[in-house]
Amino acid sequence: MCHLTVMTCEILEKYSASIRRLCQILLILISRNLGLSLNYFNEMFGKAVQAVRMNYYLSYARPDLVLGLSPHSDGNTLTMLQQDTGSIGLQIRKDSAWVLVHPIPNALVINI
Image (cartoon, rainbow, N blue to C red; front, side):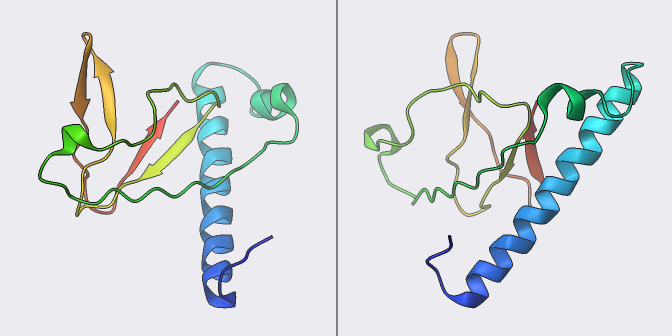
């Protein structure tokens, strides 16, 4: 249930539906490219669960002192991240070091 304004809820519902459809298309394309049936992942996973999480990272002079989300791996099949171009919050672990992922305007980061 959405506890935001009606307009915000409508926008969030449209965005969520668009992301869900994008995920469905990507899974079909991945299936096809792997030589599997087009419904392979739908049959494997059953009804998909979708969650929306929004984090906002302010710019700080000492980002090393800011506590964000704890280091984690995404436990789902696909994760769609839309980054704000005004701040850098996403990091990936590469060669035992955390590396900032610089946002690209109007792009999604897709973790598979």
